[in-house]
Amino acid sequence: MDKLETILDNTDEVVTKEELTEVLKKDHPKAYIGFEPSGTVHLGWKICTNKIKDFLNAGFDFTVLLADWHAYINDKLGGDIKTIKLCGKYMEDCFAAMGVDTGKVKFVYASEYVGDPKYWELVLKTSKAVSVARVKRAMDIMGRGAEEAEKDLSKLFYPAMQVADIFYLDLDVAYGGTDQRHAHMLARDVSKKIEKKSPVALHTPLLTGLQAGGRMNPTEAKMSKSKPDSMISIHDTADEVNRKLKKAYCPEKQVEGNPVLEMCKFVVFPELNGEVFRIERPEKWGGNLEFKSYQELEDAFKKDLHPLDVKKSTAKYLNKILEPIHAYFEQHPENYEKMKKSGIITR
Image 1 (spheres, rainbow, N blue to C red):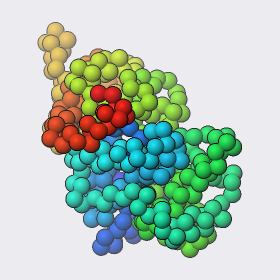
Image 2 (cartoon, rainbow, N blue to C red; image 1 turned 90 degrees about the vertical axis):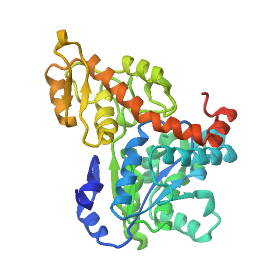
Image 3 (cartoon, rainbow, N blue to C red; image 1 turned 30 degrees about the vertical axis):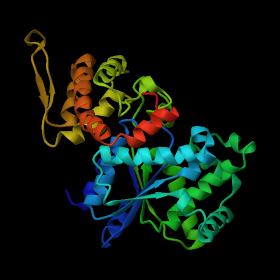
Image 4 (cartoon, helix red, strand yellow; image 1 turned 90 degrees about the horizontal axis):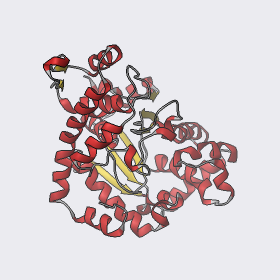
């Protein structure tokens, strides 16, 4: 694949493809993703870590913003900034454990630049360029409803700060899950009003929670650490993964909103590196099956492939993906153990 195809692989949206094509002509374009340090990391992060690798392979200077002040505003981890920063260090380990070359990625904490008057100038300029109503509509980026700003003014600062982050870091591409779309589009709108670089907005899908069945809002249905049985923690044992996949929502022949197939498409197949996805079955049930691509698996599922067969094989491959992650934390236990002692992670 060329650089453009690499960046666009497994994405939901880019605004715009033409602008991204121009950005790729630069020697060292800049991109970022922002995370609130807020607890246990789940396997849905593989979508993000794989995309970060794509950015690096395409020649980008890539920043991971560990948004500790934003997490404080959003009441994460009890609003304890010391605990939030500890979680940020654990998250740095998680990126390394999932195969990101952390020597090529720049980790930045919001607390490193909030003392800079130039940053707050950007926050104020952004605030003057948008209405309160527009900011409230963007509050879904923090998983909050607009009504929460009525009792906590700081919640209104959050979208303006996220936009200011993008300008302050002088980014060419703002990357995130689809839940970050409102912030990125707000940045694009504001950029025209305050004469700042308009970032390309690139979004990858959110994994659906394992037990989130039916037609739900994608943001509400997403895999989340707040629902332990509906997500695969990167620290889950093989038995836990098998148990969770066995209980997962996976209706026959249904592809849309099927969390097991999503795990195959966005987590398992990108890790196969050309190897086949194998389903092992007794001869009396048709024998083993092999799939060279996710599309082949999906087509078979739509036809007559049984959900239990897919679940068992998906669990097997997820456990293989988790093995090197577990090995990393066995070799680098310090921040993980601190997280457990603090009670942020329970196992």
